[in-house]
Image (tube, rainbow, N blue to C red; front, side):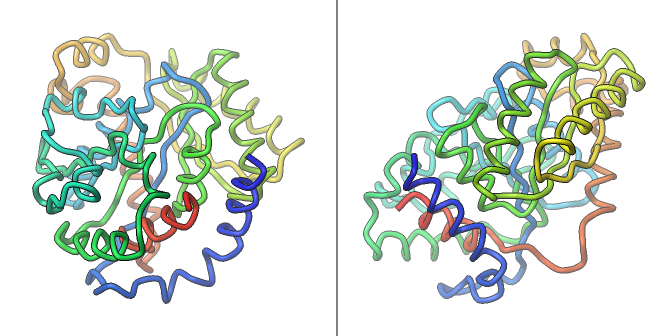
Length: 295
């Protein structure tokens, strides 16, 4: 973990300097903003949030791709009700094209399944990496890439946090969830990976509880960690959300008038309003960083 920590520190220092000259393998004409969404523990609704946020952004006219980066445990496809035949492993090792692997979900959103291929990135030759980066050009125009990581503190989660441009941490009002979210931010601060993050409070009984949860959490983080937090929004406890998971239909599609849907729409509007005019590092730039951190 020590070598990994040093890699993470070095990557964080170099990211700002390298962004402008990152792409060498045929640049995409636009560079979407890459947002990593993670959580301190499982069971807080992270993947459900990513899927429904992505679809909402897509409905608002944005072009979105979700990268399911929960290695070996991804379930974004299940939440969408789609069944991918391949994953990123097949692009890298089985010579599949990007369009054979990326599948289309509700409202035209794209999903790139991560699978277990990320575990073998360090095995790639320079030629294999260059070929993969070249294939990424076929993804097409995008405004956002939403990264859905695994929960907790791990090598891969910290790497994805280090490589993204914006970090969203999902928590709930439960003390265990807040404690684990704090531990994740503590590791992020310790390795100097990010100095700011956005917080979404899920499963809140009402707006007052959500804002109170954030204020208490923010007070602890401000006091002890070198990270600036912003309250991005909240999602109310909603039985429709549970029902939609069982039906394998995103709740913003199955129940467009539900409380949870309205909350996600507010978060999407906040993200769009905060998006700066300058473009992001792009999908090729992101994977170059991933290759560096996993090498």
